[in-house]
Length: 184
Length: 184
DNA sequence: TTTCACTATTTCAAACTTAAAGCTTGACGA
DNA sequence: TCGTCAAGCTTTAAGTTTGAAATAGTGAAA
Image (cartoon, rainbow over all chains, first blue to last red):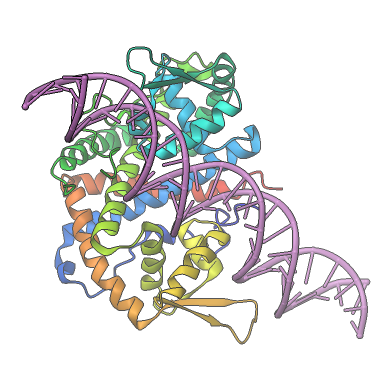
């Protein structure tokens, strides 16, 4: 009985990830209501994201015998049809470079992705979809989008408008914060 | 030079996860603008979530020599101070039951968490924070909240209002969908 | 009582992930 | 030319995660 943690409806504690995990704590800045609300929102966002990811993982496994990481890599290579270097790939997907190597290795073994050694710079390796990979991906991607459309079926145009701008601002704020991070 | 995939500011492709990976595709329902917008929003949400998670992971590693999964488990056990069964824990965190076992094993080994066998039902095991675990967690959680407050520093009260309701509706919609999922 | 279905948890193999170390190549100044 | 450093990628060790199988306990029906 796989994915039993998704079957939460019959269970008292369903979706409790999204509730406030700190509400009873006696921490220093507990009396900052804005900070508190931001934390609550983050926890809720994380919960929703995990739920959607679990549903998509299940869909990919059952319907297409593949995994989320594989799909992500292929989606990136589909978006950048001319290929990406390994570094570009890992930065695009926000994963480590070693992780990118591992997933690409498996896709190469399955003939879905090809490694192309650069001639100008022999350190550089470009990865791109093979014809078989392209065909495979597009079949999956069509259903993937329908699945997302279902999962987000409650979201109206107004909802999308509301979230789009906030997420964009959040995303941009995060990337400017990175430069001032402590990383020697 | 760790976490190089976070240092995206100097790189052309920064945050490209959050852009539309399907914009050039020739899929069947491509002409459904609402479905398209929902997909784009999902991708952007996933990107933001990954960025925040990476920052928090880095913070936990550098400042407190711990990991995100460990923190998540301890946060749940802090919220439910009387303890959770393994099943409740995995459903709360939306992870598999086997995964919960692994993380709890390590926390037990470090003396941060204790397993308590139930007397009424001998299959059941309740997990809860030890005094040491409680103390450790509260020290980390205070800084964790400050970190989230910084990362979400651009979010105003109005932003929080806007996203809170949408995410709640999304979350509730997802959990009702689950009951009708194909899972034999 | 026995049997059978169900629940709770752990174990296991395979895949995924990170962070750090290692290797090769390229760029550049002495 | 040589040395040095940085860039690009892979490898490695440790940890995380899943999904399926195994183990064990519960409860109720036959």
